[in-house]
Length: 350
Image (cartoon, one colour):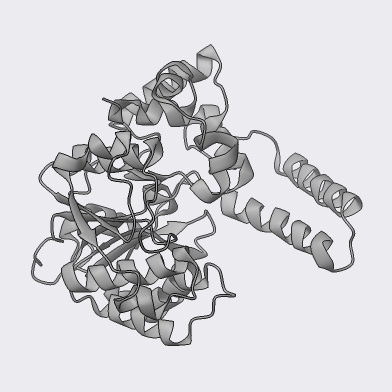
């Protein structure tokens, strides 16, 4: 059973009967320690079981996923490549006149795009931004700022929504009008996207989780005027703030199953591996032994700066990883402390 890496050193070894026994023991342990009748107890048990599905992946892309990765998924005449522009969104949760601090993690994310997409225009769409931030000042000559008035347009219409949901819809509107690559500011481009930019379909998305239950919107590659994006935007007419990630992960997967001719889907490893589970976040940020340091160096060298074969980017899942790991990172700790995350992003420091 493979959970993090196809390389033998990362395989969880053991017979099928042993693995089943261990799994059943963990389920019973969780059930024993958590109230078994409804409420939070059932929720936590369901979360435990779902995380196991998310974490389990055999590192085998489907034929369609591989064709998508290679840009050879269609026999149609060659289409124009996706526009060479990268979009970020920042500072939608602060009111007019406030300034959202732009820090080290955001800097590294933008820097990764500047390095991996050398000829691309990089745009930061914002409602509030601390333009005197140490980290923004290092980037200001290399990015284009696009201001969005929080009282007008989509931001005004959705003012009762949480910032994450406003950003969900804004990114789709930007891609519909301009096309390009959208990345959250906790995403790190690890390799150029050259092959997928020539994909014959007008939108490319990556599966989230080994169970492929969703297509996450933290990274979207799309041409201007994508029919799939239009369909996606239309669903926001019935948006509910009670559904945290339905429109951003679950719904695009359902649309892809209904309209497979309109979207190209990549394997989980391309954009969103390791996943958001506690186990996987810890895997990325735990201190490494000398042997693990050597192994990680070998992986990064073999995969052109990525940890896995066919990995193009890494999403840091900052909503979950911020407090325990990301918020206290400094350039010095990234350079000196050996974790998989630090070793992966070091090259984006000055």
